[in-house]
Structure formats: C-alpha cells, structure tokens
Amino acid sequence: MSVPASEPSQGSRIQTIDELHEYLYKGLQLEHATLPPYLTALYSLQPGKNADAWHVIRVVAVEEMLHLTLVANVMNAVGGTPDLTKPDFVPNYPTHLPCGPDYFKVHLRPFSREALDTFLKIEKPAQAAGEEDRFVPMDWAAVGLTADGAAPTQEKLAELTESASVLGLVPGEPTQRFLSIGEFYEEIIRGVNHLEDQARRAGTTIFTGDPARQVTPEYFYSGGGDVIKVTGRDTAVAALTLVAEQGEGLYGGIFDSQDEIAHYYRFQQLEKGRYYQKGDDPGEPSGPDLHVDWGAVYPVKPDIKLADLAGDPHILAAAKEFNRSYATFLTSLNLAYNGQPALLLKAVWEMFRIRDSMNRLIRNPLTGHPGANAGPTFEL
Image (cartoon, rainbow, N blue to C red; front, top):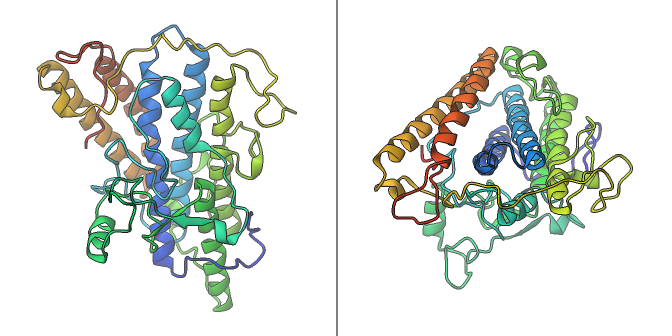
C-alpha cells in the first residue's frame, strides 16, 4: 500500500500542516517509546554471555535512535518543532504504543521469552487488506478504561486525550487506532503528499523549514543505515519509508532499502535460533545457528517504580540519578534536533553514562522483593 512520492495521495486524513505536525510528534513518541524496554532488556543480559542476543538488541536500539532522528528531520523540514521534553513525551510503563495496536502493552522487564514476544508484537508487519481495514475501533476495555468495552463519555474522552494515559489514539480520531505502525507511517506519507500537492497548486511548498536544523550523516553514525537530509517531498517520503521498512519490514521485505535486516526479523532470529541470510523467505532463516541462554539474565523487577525502592535508599538514589541522566540525554537530543546537530555527539557520550548508571541498578538485589533486582524506572 505504498504511496509513491510522484503521485497524488488519495484519502489522506491529514488535512492541515498542524495535523501533520501532530502526527510527526506522535512518531517521535512512538520511536522513543521502544527505547526504554529495549535498553532494559539489553543491560539485563549478564556480561560475557548471550553475545548473539546482545548484538541483536543493541543494533535495534541504535537504529531506533536513527528513526527518531529521521522523524525529527521530517518535522523540521515541514516547519515543525521537535520537542522531546514535553511532560507526556516519556510514557508511564507499562504502556500501549502511540497510535499503534492496543492488544498488548509494552513493559520494562529483563530479557526473556515474554520480552521477546512483546518486541515481535511491536515490530510485527501488518499491512491492511484495504482502505476500510487501515483503522480499527479502539478497544476501551483492552486499554483499561471501561469494564464493558464501551467508549467513554465525551467529557471523559476529552480528559483522556489531554493526558498521556492513552497513547494509542489516532490524532484527531480518538475513537480509532491504526492497525499497525506501518499503517501509521503510511498515513503520514499520504499527508505529506496531499499537503505538498495542495501547496504546489498554490505555487508554494510545505517544506519551509530551516535547512540548518537538519541532522546530516556526519553527525550520526549507527552502522545500521544512514541519516537522510530532508529537503523536499522525495527525501521526506524516503526517510519515512526507511523508518517503516527498517522497523517492521514494511511490504514484507526481510531487508530494507539500505540492505539492513528489519527489526521484526532481527528479533525473530532469537526466536528461531538461527540468522537470516540473503535469499531466505520470511519465517525461514537458513543462516548460522544463534544461541540464546535464557537463564543468563539479571532478574530485574518488571515495571519497577521509585516507590518499590523505598527499602533500599542507596538504590533509590541511584535510580533518581539515572532518571536525571536520562532527562539530560533527552535534552541534548532535543537541542540537536532544534538547530544544534553537533550535540548528537554529546548525546552519544551521555548514552554511555546511562549504560553505567543502568548497570549499577540492574546488578543489585532488592530488599523486600525476593529474587528480584533493581532496574531503571524512566520516571522523569
């Protein structure tokens, strides 16, 4: 269901530049929302063990940073302002994905079969069969808002959409959600095409952003795809398509347009115990064996909160310090996306501080929680 950049888009729900900005902000939230669970699982792996799992999760986490940067580049190109410091930007885990499916929640927990199952659900390819299937009704009971699944009252709905408690809502359509993350990005691509077609007919363009705010390849190297400088329609569509391809293998491909394995299939390698190689069919990797030791993991308490650390004042202090470090990391990213791209280098350094701080938490047993270790709470 890809929408070619050269053709007019049909049926776009994005009708104004402000609505496009809102969708792109949701995209930033979406890409970031996967980082805390991926990082928690990554650093729960015991050192010197599970090298294959370590490599897979680390590559995906770094590529989520690339996706965050690509969405920010599109937002800047169309005159928006990325803001990773809003009070609702970091979700309260467990959470549903912004604009994504609502049949599962994303948790902060150690690497495990349950965590891997969630990661596969996050990245799962799901392309709608037709236009009428791209959106599905919000299951209010599934998101814990009503007992019988009935939609909330208009007053309650207004209250909910002003809060961060429901991240799955389609912007402007609070009774619906997208079938998949790929369909969410499909809608943004349609919106870009629709608004740019309108602008061109009027002799203008929606790409009015300052080119100096673009993060270019020299400021970001991930080893898993390149940053795309967004200067117009074609590069915007290319950036958004890469995010969807590299995440869930949009349109069914194991490898994306930059020859990287899509996240869904990277994680599936852990499930199948074997690496993908060129020529493989989805679900049938034929490469070298991949070993997973499910027991070589620190037993991090799932969805841990600061309140759980009351009996361990030293761990509580470390958890608060971690949250401050993570807030600083997001602030550096925000500055990088708002005209100071060189600060991405500072953000990379802060990522190492976050790793060290996270390790100090994850390797410490908790008082009053037998068999459970501490972990990052991401309560900013």
